[in-house]
Image 1 (tube, rainbow, N blue to C red):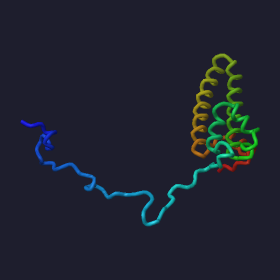
Image 2: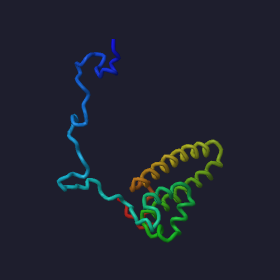
Image 3: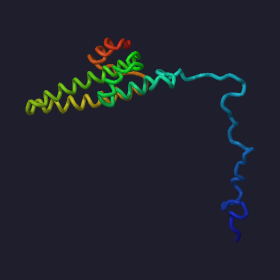
Image 4: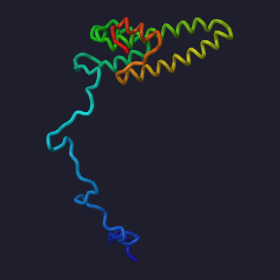
Length: 160
């Protein structure tokens, strides 16, 4: 008996036929961009794109502002970033979340009831912080009840 790999036939026989070659594509060959010249831009331009000589994009700076309060403070002071309302909004919102977290720490001094409030408040702030970070990376924002209105007034960034 000959080896099927040597003869080129399959072990089940030739019931399946030969494998498709490069000329026998099961689907039509497509190229990008279309050959007829009808290029459609289905994606809107990304929010916050800036030239390379002006530093980080707005989305990257807005996301980085949530890492700690240090980048948020730097973005409120440094020249190219403190003029961008999107970056300022997220920096102020991050600082407001930090102040709220500090106030929760003061409440944690109270035994039992303070510990419960601190635990629930910290978990809530952690989830809100992660959601704000994700939304900033997408070029959007998370509307927090009082904090977002305050950050909007301080930064000049219009929120709905």
